[in-house]
Every structure is written in structure tokens, then in C-alpha cells.
Amino acid sequence: MDLYIDKLKVNYKVSGTGRNVVLLHGWGCCIKTFEPVHNYLEKNFCTYSLDLPGFGDSDEPPAVWGIDEYGDLIIKFLEKLNIEDPILMGHSFGGKICIFVAAKKKINKVILIGSTGVKPKRKINYYFKVYSYKVAKHALKLPFLIKYRDQVLSSFKKKTGSADYRNASGTMQQILVKSVNEDLKWLMPQVKAPVLLIWGENDTATPVSDGKIMEKLMVDAGLVVLKNAGHYAYLDKFNEFIIIISNFLKKEMVENID
Image (cartoon, rainbow, N blue to C red):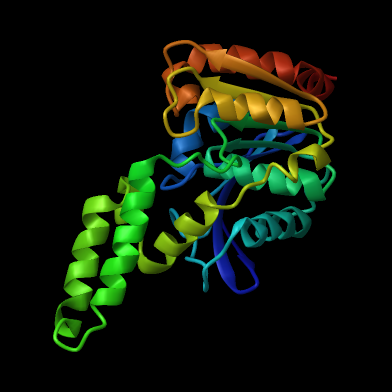
């Protein structure tokens, strides 16, 4: 289904009955990434999955968005579809958006899986890459080098950027950089809903230490670490994941049965 929000097409899927659950995928993913979870939840909940702007079948943002713009869009999505007091579930980048929304709007419960939101600690090689790029960009303004500027900078980005960065369009590359550098620790204490944090012990994209920080900063949060799982812990250990979220959502599941 398509929903237009401020002239931007947002593709979404909805199925099932009961309390509303909204699933937000991670960077570089789409509705299909959460499909196994959606299929499970639809048995007891009215379950929504959507392609975030710039991914799947949704339109790309018209400008360089940050978490504020993505969060505001999700709030408008909820309001347009009359989704009140929902359960939010977000993986990675989607989790970061959930944090923003839960801090601004009444939410029933939140499930964050390997969520971003804590600004990563940079290693020295990161700063070397950043400053090398800035020096190269400045040097290539010289008259005798200007004709090589685009080619050299493009090559530099390909060699030093992450896979997510390399695979994104120009606008989405800038959005990725902006998102990575947005720290939401200041916003986390404003999340009043119960929060379940699920992490893979081998997650290298968002380390378990990030989950521990979120657990301390949020009012009512608990962290579960899945053994032998990585950044996609909900897929790596799907059966364990389902048991854990079912226990967390037991009250809401009973409500639907009644």
C-alpha cells in the first residue's frame, strides 16, 4: 500500500488484528527484512511494516534528512492511519527513529534490536580518512588539478567508505553520515514506555556496550544479549527472539484473545 505524507510516497504493509505494532527496518533494508517477524506478529497484532524513505518502494527524501525528519514522518504516519498507543519495534537505524518517536509521543512499548543512537567512538583510522579526504578536497581546488577533482574524490570515497555508504545515492550518503553522527543519549531519558533491548553478543555495527548505555539512560529498560548472534540478531536467533518478544508482549497478546 502507498500513503502520501507531505507529497512523499511511503510504501507499507498491514495485516492482522489487535493492538497496533509498527516495524521499522535498519539502514539499507526494507519491509522484506522484517517479514518473518511481521508474519509472526500478525497472528496476535495489527502489524505494520513500512519502507522508510529512501529504501524499498518508498520515495527518497527531498533533502538531507536527519532523525528529526524521519521521526516526524513516522509520527505523521501514525496520525494519518489513526494508530494510537502502538508498540514500536526497530532494528539499527529503525531503532534510532523509534527512540525519537517514543520520546515525543505516547507509545505502549518499544523493542530495540541492535539500535543505533549512541554516537560511535571513532578509531584513529577514521579521523585519518576524514582529514585525508578534506585535505584532498582542498588541494584539488588548485587550477592544474581541478579537472581530476571529481574522479579522485569519487575513488577516495569508494576506497574508504563503508559498504552502506558506497551503495547509497548522493543524498542518502549525506543522510547516512548525518544519522551516524547524531547522538540521542540526551533524548533517551524522555522515553517513558517500557523498552526491551535485544542485542547480538557479536554485533560489530552497534556493540553491546551501546545497549548497556541505553539500558542505563532509559527509565524502564531491560537488555537481553543473544549468544552467537550478530547485528541481525533477530534473524540469527529467530526462535529465541520470538520467545523473548512474546514474553515481553504477553499482556498485549492476552488482550487480543479476550
